[in-house]
Length: 348
Image 1 (cartoon, rainbow, N blue to C red):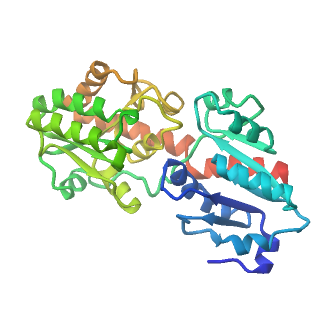
Image 2 (cartoon, rainbow, N blue to C red):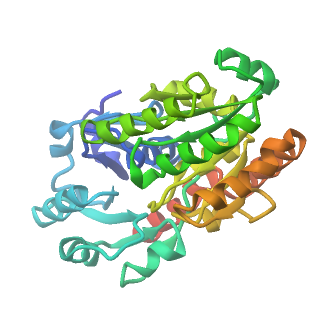
């Protein structure tokens, strides 16, 4: 759905997505943008537009020049901040908002851009600590209807055609930063003792990570687990909820992370959780209640945390139910959209 000149004049919010490759930032943006469009007259500029929000292109953007009423430009990347700063300098009546999930010291360019924002949002206290300016804390949310437990997890698992009765998963791009090697090493030690379980790694393998992925496959083959540890590669977005519903346990093994959206996706789907202390894990997970927290990169700790859940599927199911309840209560998309909307209202 494109916008005409009248709609351009009535716009209150532009959601730019100026990145060609699909990423975690794109995923979080796609989820919350339609909820924001329920609260404000909004349009999406760029690739991978979701349903539920109008789309605009460069020609539509030109229609917003020299209007008098303010217009929110909500950036999530450096290039989007740069475009917003330039447009504002050229006369677009923009109010610039930036969301940061990064948990690291920012480059000089990012710091310079952040100082020119009218408002800044951080997804956690730790992310906010690196911003060197006032920020509003708004954790990411998840669509709890889309990422929901199956009515019958055994039947959902059976659809995958994997050996055994249960699945343990690790989702995200296949690379060392995501700890895929830690997960594979843990599976090579655990799966021989638990024949009812299969493991699945869902995520893209980019060209520069091909050697890393091949190394993982060799470890799996050497352990005699080729049929029980499956690396699917990248899957269409629409298939991800189905794969989460097949899991009894989810392992979040990142060594470092901005936020870690897969944590929320798995928790919302009712999977028991073992998570490294990376990204927003300590914000999202109640240790030993809705999941178990472990040190990043520690195979021994991961094995020790996973084994009780592999041994007792009833306990795993109970943990998954508690995780689901926590997400519904505190980390829904509506909660995220409402908190972002409050930031917008202070600028409009």
